Length: 377
Ligand code: TRH
Image (cartoon, rainbow, N blue to C red; front, side):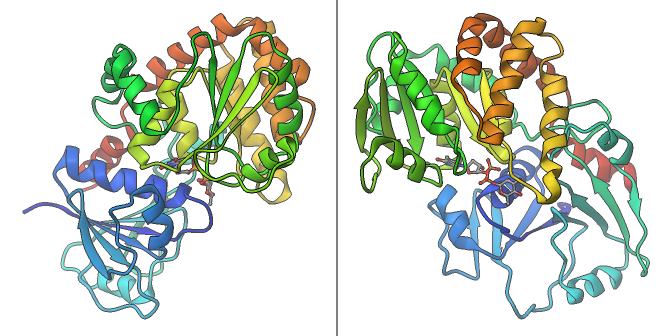
């Protein structure tokens, strides 16, 4: 019989929680042949990144995963062999009792948020003592050998390479978004939270001799784009040009299509957790808008990642990228850091590729979780 897995997800805000758990659930089914149920409290957010999800159904199957609406009044179900509690969402008390009542113990894993901080390697895989006889462990994604790694589907990089080598497929994909690029145009994707630095970055792009097209998926940054353009609502398909920069709003696409958008662009601005990782798999230079935390806790995460990411760059290229990321995350001036990034473009491009290969040489997170379970039983 297949090992059964239950993954629990509370959508705090945005799309990262469901983005990560849905990606993991799909991969556990597709690549490990497991029986996976995904419990989600907000199917509306889910529908956004996987439109075939019906937000009105209590239970449904998608890609071989049983998706269950996490009900406010929990109904008794049998507990699975492996229980993944994503990002510290609290399991229903009745479900915990069901776990404790099993003849064989269940493995209970708390999947944590991604961080490059050095303490992560020391905490990955540690047990978290529980009052009942349940066994719970911390599972930390990460960038280094002693962490749980990053979500990466088998064949992802080969798919990307095939796509990159197929000019027609690229053009057809962009056309499906209503995008028609001009020769020599730099392509940037822009997925970010509200950001006070945007206006100056756009000014800088507008003044550049090389034309730039910025593709903006529907989302929170659009208000800043509107303000800069001095226009009203910006529906998908809206295109506005100012100097050397063309801004084009694109629809929020299905999760796997978003990868293609990243693969099409020369530079990707991403945010949160999942799009941040996907941009790394795109092997292109990127700009990260980190999710802000209380007491500025996110800042150490940003610096910890940068320290790893710029390790093999020349000091001046590393400095250029670092200053750009810091400016973007603090609402500071982007003009000079962006010019410096352009001055080091080839080196940053090569580094993005090498970083991607280095990360891909580590076991992916889904395989690491499956191995964790195998070693535990
Ligand atoms: O939406 P986010 O800001 O999510 C954040 C972070 O995960 C953060 O850590 C968490 O604490 C907070 O939510 C609550 O950014 P993230 O993580 O990149 O998730 C976006 C998801 O949306 C990702 O799976 C990619 C997907 N996506 C699409 O499927 N289509 C699109 O067009 C776009 C732009 C994104």
